[in-house]
Length: 455
Image (cartoon, rainbow, N blue to C red; front, side, top):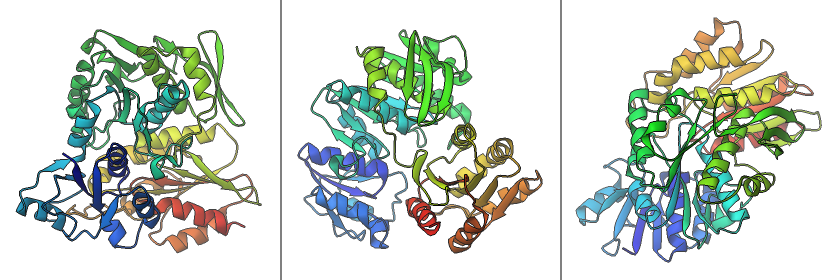
């Protein structure tokens, strides 16, 4: 199969796969309704510069010469590209199916879990790259060590035999992968009920041919230990594990901790990133890279775009941060990391998807209530809607109304201009403004707009 058409090619996972197939000599084209709406044009240009032809999402890009149409989970059967493919009897495959086909041509390391996947994938890929393994890495976010790689920074097109991927559980597609190494960073409520997640990850761990890496601080992860004969565990909370981070200390430009008899420096903040680092070290060890080699690599790791990414510090001493956190666990980890340093928080959190928000509502409310101090401020715009047939039976206002009862400073403000006005009025020297949320790529632009407005 040589000619792939990607419907929704602008998505982070879709564009990564499209780019890696392009690097292997396949003919790649695609469409995206965001491009048609005049959005994400930088990404469109990047894809075009890599030789990917972009069409309007009107069916015109799907022809008799197309061997396969690749769709994301958000693509409906009624989209013209899919309808054209059905009309021409062209196979339509989910992204995960095509990724699995490519992945199984390599010694595969699959990073799964409900939190930390993208950062851990980036860390593991960097460890391999740093140690001359020349891996293929297919990630869901831009790796800041390789921002220009294949135009987006989410892909490393190595020529070696190892392939590292971010394996998604949200649509159940993780069941397609048969890795050499399975990695489970955490199992918490996110997209699917816990009962479903447990079964998915149980199968995922059992299928690993070399071994698995599990989080000893998460009971549901640790419960999978008997599913594979070769399991490596890690802990940042003092639990019994093969890798234990001790004496974790926030420092000015990152975090330090002890691993075995070595003091490790990680240029990232937060215990959750220490956990991500241990995950990557353990996975690398399963394929023959020593802990010392991994530690040396991680000292140079620059992080992932939108994972506690500092946009800048204004002349007034106000820091603006862009962050992808969107479920209770991720939000809690971000706020805990920021609370290790002085300064109050002004949080702008945009929920995404009506169904996920409804499912996570209680957890989101509890997390903000627990992690926010009384002098912090939370602002929520309306839930991000990416299209489709979702029932709009919940609003950000429902979360804010519940949080008002806790005594926290909270606001429901759908208009970004009004958010900007309030933020400028509230922020003083030493404050951190954090823009949080997933899926909506304009959030990064909004974070930069806030920073630029501070002077």
